[in-house]
Image (cartoon, rainbow, N blue to C red):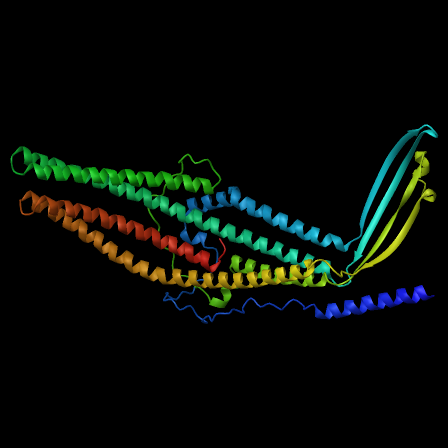
Length: 459
């Protein structure tokens, strides 16, 4: 009687301690993706032309079938994207593993034993044993861990979407870089031919004694420099082609064709509102889900201080005859219920709680950092487009002026009105203007793709 009263008193104290600890466990905070520690405007601050066209798949806006084919090939064959897909599968299975403890765990172990001694001689027996254990998740500790793993699986899905968007953007940008590099090579090749004409002109004048040997040397040096520039541009083409093939999951053998020209940038798009960015960019969604996952893991670590109630059962049968082992009447079993309350763990549980609190702080600040960087990327690309358009117009005018001045310089040199250095400068100015114009045309396309990527738009 006294022992029964003592056991009841112990159980009551354990439950009172559990209620106290449960009240001390703080529930996970209600997170809002729109809650940021820095102020953000209601509209984008960068100057950008207004547009009415909806924000949708950006690949079709370039109206380039070859580019669309390359992007689709990359999305199917790129190894980094396949690795990201595998991480999604792994995260989903991890969520299943995390929640498996909520269900009873049953193990069955059949066996055969044979022994021999001098007293009893040889003996053998068949065994069929089972063991069952089930932790009653009264406080929701295992469930909370499962929810955390589920949030991390959802974050892995958003990571996959981010890798997919980034891959499509890199393929498109590299494709335009190849086109620019190829056009740069053509411009340099034409410049070498044009300067060859000047070499013939100067050599003819030198043979007639109308010019000095220094002029011929300067012209030959200029041609050599142009040839070196051509070789560099051709090298850039093969480097970019191999880079693109690696993105496509192909062996880099430089067999990809280049386009004949760079397309005009698509029309201005409706960039939307800053608040919409938080609900659309995959990396932001992934960072927010990881923040919530860390909240759940902290809550689970706090609940580890509470007592655990476990049901266990074990049993089976052992007999020399196999048929008797499988007879249910021969089985013996026992059932037990246990309660375990952590009392002293060397500070492990408390340290785990502090660890999870630090993880929560890290995830929260990581989300703020990702959000701030996302706003920077959008503002930066919005502002860059207007500046690049002005630069492109100015360089287009420079190309026209340098081509006209080069023709005038050739005529003036033939008439002996200018020195050879002035003529060579006119050729260099023409090449530089053409090269800069091609570069800024490609930068406009690259910046537009960066804008699509920054806004988190679908491919």
